[in-house]
Image (cartoon, rainbow, N blue to C red; front, side, top):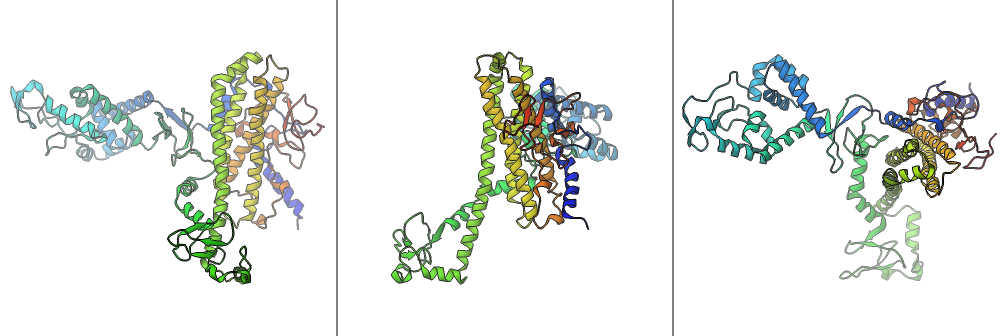
Length: 589
């Protein structure tokens, strides 16, 4: 039978590929040095990294793009079915702007489709009289001032304008406009709207039409960010639901909440509901107060002795511990600061159900507060990082370029670092919601999860400090710094390693931490087995940072890539010129 060490070795070798972000042989190195060459990265590398991370399975649409897509679809239907563009537009609206569905339905039963959407078999002209009676105001008007839909029912221009204007002001229902004659179901198309409505109504109608194209189409949605006018066209069945709009807002296509990988939409919904639910107020009241035994009003005790007096008009005096009348208390019950009746009853397990509920509520509240505070702290830190990124792009990058005498195109590694920080703060924030709903009885998974989460926090803090504190040194310099290239190497290396770790952390959580199987059910997850830290070290002695590849979003690099070395003790990425680790002072061997 295999020993435990053999089993750990097997697990370690299987996990190495997963957590290093690539397959065996992808950029591996036989020595302990990481194989990066960040100093020689061209200016397009950061954009390449970002595009890998975002996995472009969607397209951002501006207002002009929406209009162009809409016109293209209308032209397709008009050409294939040999109908006017106005009729093609009506058809598409009725079938949620699905070109394929329009074609299928039309060729399956054209007569039924015509009846549903209000198309007549033949166009009916108005009577050929010099004067016609309007069907709304019943005034006689010259035929030249009358208009009619395909049904031929004549109405004067003033009545048409009033009818169209009222329909448009009533809302998007104007897109399904029919003939004003109550007995007629003939459709009124955009061509009649354009010819009869005034400029303001035409503009409103056009906006409703564009909104319909996005809101009725299952492949498109508006970006949910306040004030954003972009829409998103999504490729169904493409894996990740994360979308990053041009307005910098990231959201989930499936539920339209903010992007929340690695947590699923159902968990996010529960977490948001919990954060806003009144139940948490009740939990706080249960955990931190007790009802007056007489009037039942909740009372919070924050200091003082156990002698409680309820507020007027009740004024009942009672013991905080046992809720009994204070008149029955004194030296024989343990004095003002103790109640031996309660302690004796508690030791015997005789205290009542309400006390047990209070204890449960208190424990539940403390657990929720632990996760919520950290969730909120990472959200706050992410917002601050977004502000710092904006400040960097608008002002500081140009200043740094002047001080260090380098073009801004060579400073994109700093922008990439801040983008990575923002993304990692978002991921780390949602890991706390994940941890809150992780079942308590799965001890091995919880231990594994908390270890991985702790390593992620440690690595992110290292990157954040480098991008925030160490960058400030070069911003405050008066002349070009000799060690600026070392800083470039260090920050780019940390960015790549942190990105690699977080990508694998997300994948591990999305798969439910499947590598913690029944064999680990006793909670004996060895850190030597699960230690997949930021470029951590495997049993074979190879640096795990060396297997970073384009598969996890990093750029492919060739040649002699030995600009940095990874510390064997803390895995920190150090520039080649450093003899000691800049994080833990461990000497480089």
